[in-house]
Length: 294
Image (cartoon, rainbow, N blue to C red; front, side):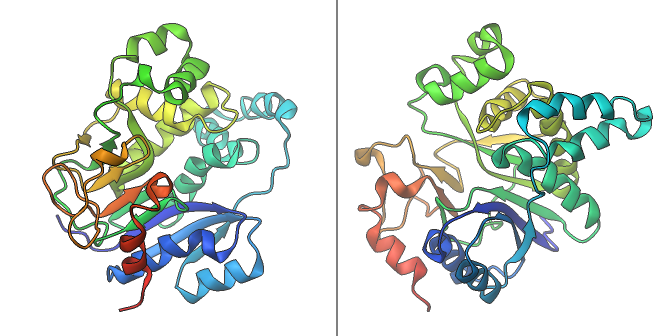
């Protein structure tokens, strides 16, 4: 895998430097020297200073000019545009009315389109509940688009959030069709740049199609991947995963090594840990190590 120049993309809204410290310091301690860009909204001056100090690029989220009741008028206006630019305009304008978590995908698409040719690989990630134990891109890539299952003990029907988001977006029949599938977490995704540019318009179109109203992108993500809408993708499971989502993992199933680092099912230290707040006490030693300068 020839990773010439990677970039990490995420969002940060509100909060103090402490909310981002674990993400930033643990990443830098891995030795990662690629780019990081966060789309930000309502950050305190001290938080902006902290991010600049650690070489994090910042992009401001578009202002929300269109309240929910005006989104239909905006979509009507876009439909009057010439066909060849209509789809892309619809996606770009969605940044101005979708909730931040859903609008991020349109922001990422515009950013990567504007920087096309600069980056070879991208990581789309949550920020406040993510930390790093190894260089993020240094793992066995099995596909141009890499996603990661949640805890194997849970199916979509067992998680009211994911099943509810699918039902809200696509209706009860679609939710029932996916109820026995594994949960794929949208919080961390890796992709080669061409695969990212294939995926981003798809998820953006689905956000617009279902009239997304916030925090539903995991439902859309599962719908897209379980229906195999991408040319090539791979979903990593516990024994081989470099990314571990621990939100649904019970304390007795959380595997740690002697130094307190988080392990996958094969006993290997994972690159990325997501949703760690639930296990903050058990991970105290690890968190102290990864955020302390070498």
